[in-house]
Image 1 (cartoon, rainbow, N blue to C red):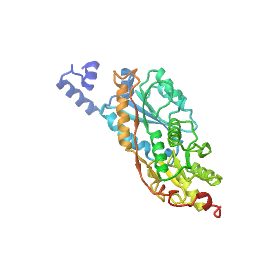
Image 2 (cartoon, one colour):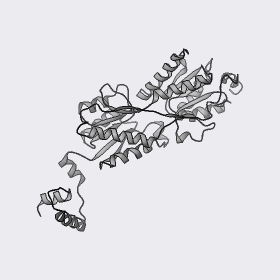
Image 3 (tube, rainbow, N blue to C red):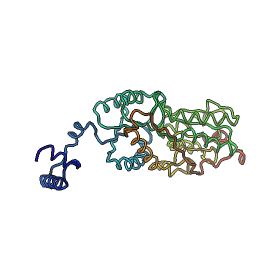
Image 4 (cartoon, one colour):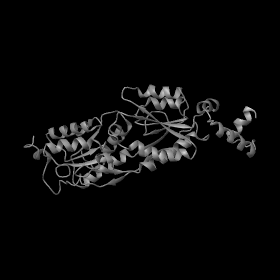
Length: 343
């Protein structure tokens, strides 16, 4: 048979009879032949792959947290319906994330990209938009209009503050990541807006920026312990800060949930064994990943190319714990008073 006939048979083209397809595939199996994926990519101009670009130097990835793996579980399920593979592209701390993406696009390693840890001004977004490469971001960011899916950071901050205000707290601190990323900006905005709506003064010295790590949580505790007028509650924009926060507070004789109310961002397996249990917010990451996959498919469809695409905020529900059981209305015990002897 001619090369073209064999090619059509291997690709199940309609103009080749079922008998010919069967003969060609039987011969391929007997000879151990497998199509060359790279060759197909060059010929067709597509890879059949979607790439998720992820930072490795975050608390979530460095501590083995399962955020991305749970997300990918749902994402891959949706991509598989269109015979698309998912590729993870990790970006290390010594790598320029902007140049890393440029190199990946130039090598055409994927048909579409998902980028995370977006920044308010994100060069990656502008680059992908200019190159007309299908992409979706996990989080808002960048000045170009584009498709994105984001957790409700602003809404969680607002719900956290509302919850603490209802318990009688007015001195509410905020701890957030010291990086310039979109999620932090959204969280801070929700915190400030909700306090203002309740006519509670926004004390900027109570907005504490620390590294997103357990060590950052210990730094947060030091800040709180040294304040002349100590907050009675703290909201964590990154729940992993609770690991270092709890440890340092316990050393000072301060107990979360008894002397200081604490609310974390997301219910995280890494924080599961904290005592007292951390009040936080939960979300199905598998469903979140599935929705991300649907938005990616929209961007890859002929009608979606060149369009802004969907922009959605994914809501989260409170998962009550014991870390915010302390209320100034029911007890006069203040953290600053309880730590003098311990320190």
